[in-house]
Length: 322
Image 1 (cartoon, rainbow, N blue to C red):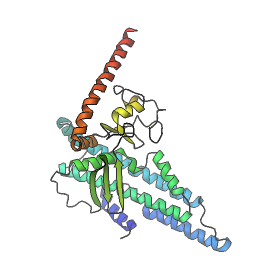
Image 2 (image 1 turned 180 degrees about the horizontal axis):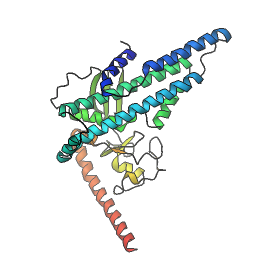
Image 3 (image 1 turned 45 degrees about the vertical axis):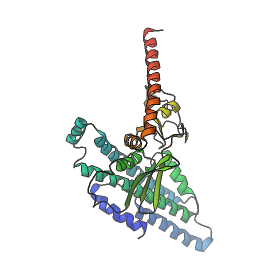
Image 4 (image 1 turned 120 degrees about the vertical axis):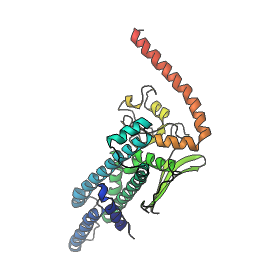
């Protein structure tokens, strides 16, 4: 079965949840019309390929795709954030959240929702990738890949979302939970934590057409991320390493970083204020790398105490005017 048909069938099943989606069929019609019209025009005048910049496509195709990508990633982030907020809440806090009605159902429903959201993210990521490849094929261009890069800089690329990494870790953490998921979509093959030369990564597959691998090595200390945090550009670092890169102390936190401070990897500015602490990933790594985690806890405790002491001594000196 072709992907487009699989995608349409999957999204029809999701309609009752009112989830936004990429209009794959509509976008393919735009490209088909462009190709047909240009071929008709070329038959009279020349045999040149469809131009790199097509006013018809550029005026309808990219704006439509941009709006749909924004809706998909916005919906995914909000639903994933609420789900993990419930799961990670304390006993009393969890009761309060359930009472407020942020999510209805049982623990089984919570697990199923997490699984469904990962599937939703990956299948839409594949749809976006395929339609942009089709655009480049029709136009003999690389504008589709340029658009993808622009979407990443605008933070509407769903594979950049820190909540995808958190949901993958959430899925692995609950793997031992005996929950009946017999009604789960067969598209989803599950997530796993892999180690290659002692370097961990999160891996996820979706119906054999794509595999997502998220590297869990901090590019600053070159070790497994500890107390991981994801910047809004999608890159993951140790919390203390991120604070160092942002020129702030752990007492001040990343929200105090100057807007001019850049990600050490992509060099994008203003990525620290909206950083997300990856608590599910932290739980997963602490269970899977117990010896390493214990050693990092000991060494970082010393550094945290030192920074806290320096911070409060500075505050006291400022207060008394020394």
